[in-house]
Amino acid sequence: MNLLEGKTAIVTGAARGIGRAIALTFAKAGANVAFTDLQLNENTESLVKEIEALGRKAKAYASDASNLAQTEEVVASIVEEFGTVDVLVNNAGITMDTLLMRMTEQQWDTVINVNLKSVFNFTKAVQRVMLKAKSGSIVNLSSVVGVHGNAGQGNYSASKAGIIGFTKSMAQELGSRNIRCNAVAPGFIITEMTGKLTEEQRKAWEDFIPMKRGGTPEEVANVCLFLASDMSSYVSGQVLSICGAMKT
Image (cartoon, rainbow, N blue to C red; front, side, top):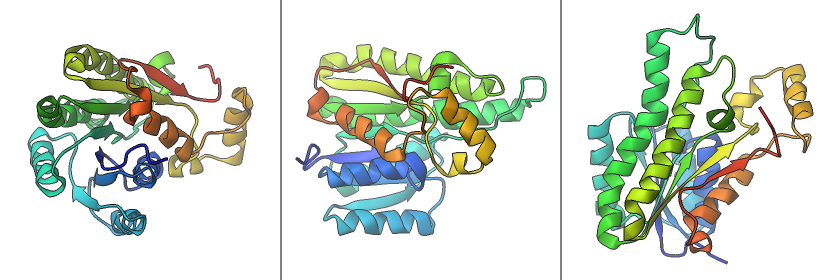
């Protein structure tokens, strides 16, 4: 069942990991996909080819998601190329983990700008198209640490908690125009980032999770697909955790 047949989706930060899985899952569900990353390289090129091999239209855009002017230019280019935007997935994000006593102002500002301001930028730029169409779904990538916090991740936790507050506000602000806004909160997901952990660190995480394993990017992508599609047509302002019942 092609849940996104004929729709156009934007996925930010899609060159690798969860963003890439979301872009591919959406394409398999029938969507044409415009995606962004900080720079175009072999990862973005291969993703375009994978999506096109599924019979869908795809294009990669170089974009600093934390820059509003760049974001508005990119969204304008996407609308010109694809005609519309039905779904926005705000996935772009980074970590600069350290304890507060060692955290620099630059580490704080960079994480807040890339993770939180980028959500403001893309939502603001895309809302004009969705308001005109009186339709749309926005899915924002938060995190379980945005719900519960985590020592050594004050900047990341603050950015992801901010995304939740923004999501709930936009759901109320845009709901009368049939635009939905939801967030997902992944837990321990197996990506390149977690691949840097030692076997001991990874096992400690898995022992902490009731389901005794990390999640996959595809499992996050499937929840995003549900929220992007008409299957969730009366779901808005919600935060869905994808964490195997993990508590922090």
